[in-house]
Image (spheres, rainbow, N blue to C red):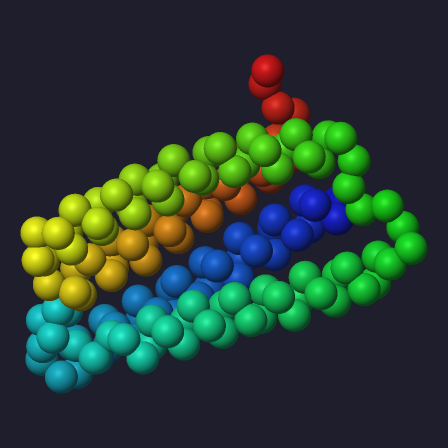
Length: 142
């Protein structure tokens, strides 16, 4: 498994773990407090989930780069796979941003707008990582 493929796999696992942990906290809070989701204190857990997930990924990526110092970690194939994965994930992320902007313009509750953006960005990231891993295994169709 090359550097790029390993990087994508680790990012997929860390992203999924942060997403699941966030939703577990919100669901448990809603169940134990007897509140609807929109009334649960979700801001702190969301910020912690994004911050810790991103920070942990940065540490893991930095460690991987440091261990690979002095050796070539990318090539033309990696660049092509990265472009393909970004194209796949960007569509979902862009759609989430557009939906969030529309929701904010319509003065929808902040809970729903934030979660559309959060879930959409997560799905875009997961789709991009999955496309990248599939391309490493099967190649990129032209």
